[in-house]
Image (cartoon, rainbow, N blue to C red; front, side, top):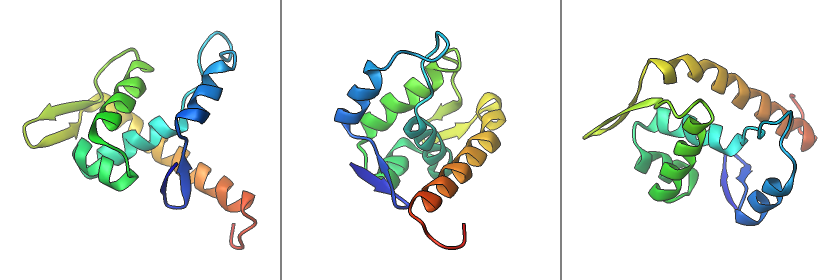
Length: 118
């Protein structure tokens, strides 16, 4: 598993276990790791920078980002530019919510770890 800020990104074995679960309410649950990829790409301005930040390859970042975008109807969330990527209007509309989700997950991780200052 690769790690970012002390949180682990699930390896293929865990993703396989998740896939075996039935979908929630007829829809598959969102994968938190895909949200983290979305945020890393938005912050880094490129898939390569996101890959470095998360310890993942650029092709893996591209696949995870495509999966995240597919969950929103396949609509691109970034403009692909020669120098990298830039959030488009659809992506900008998700950014604050994704950052809120990140803060919530970090809080849960701190509580789970029993760290002070939760």
